[in-house]
Length: 366
Image (cartoon, rainbow, N blue to C red; front, top):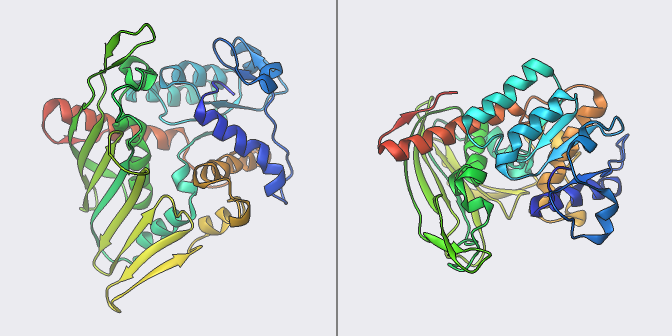
């Protein structure tokens, strides 16, 4: 593992739980080494701590490198791992920006191929997959419009420190990149490719505390609102915020078509609310499965009684798919988000930022 912040701990939880939850796999994953600048505070893991990534990528006993570092480190670390022939599992976004994302995918052509996957774990949530399947099967009819929201309150306090996610050189952007790239990928996955974007964004808290007691300037946005037009003509909204005053975070996907609508709520990943216009009836469909991808997902997604929580469950299934593909020696499912898919989703976010600067619609280009 490269990096050991909060998201890395979610990955670690999923990895350690796999032998107890999955009965029919041929592998037992384990964390061999952890690279983190400075000290590793967790005393139980100090024996795994290494001070440079070479100790990991040069180790022939390590099969997969899991990159959970700040965004600014993704390009160098991913390219180094690829060059050494390691399979790579990478937290989103692929790179600090689209140029870095392209460099990472280009590295696959220069030194690869190696197994690769990005942690777009929404693709591994049962209700999300069901939403995609209903759309692709035409059960919602022609899709007219949609709304994908990710609303957090985590940065609403002005006393939250100026960490790396609020520094453009380290993060690449605010919630439009941090949260929005998940939504952009989900829109592409469920509804189709995005043609044009038009963005409004803003920063609510412009200064935050530094470690020395002074205050520093925030140079990323706190919220963003993106109007989108898909190549198939559907129109919709991507809405993200880290300063939404809510009791708990809210992530919802709404899709409206000529035959009905569907609502996905991230805290109910096993249920999808579906309205069918002809019969005038709405139903909450539990554990929906409409496709081969959904069937496969049911074999790697933790059962309800063994749930680790919606976030860890989704990461669990995403990582299990990577391990399944690695042991099989091939990419088992085309639905899994590889580096090329992640690059296309990052191109959407790049266009959205460009639109905000120009105050005009921008066409998405990979």
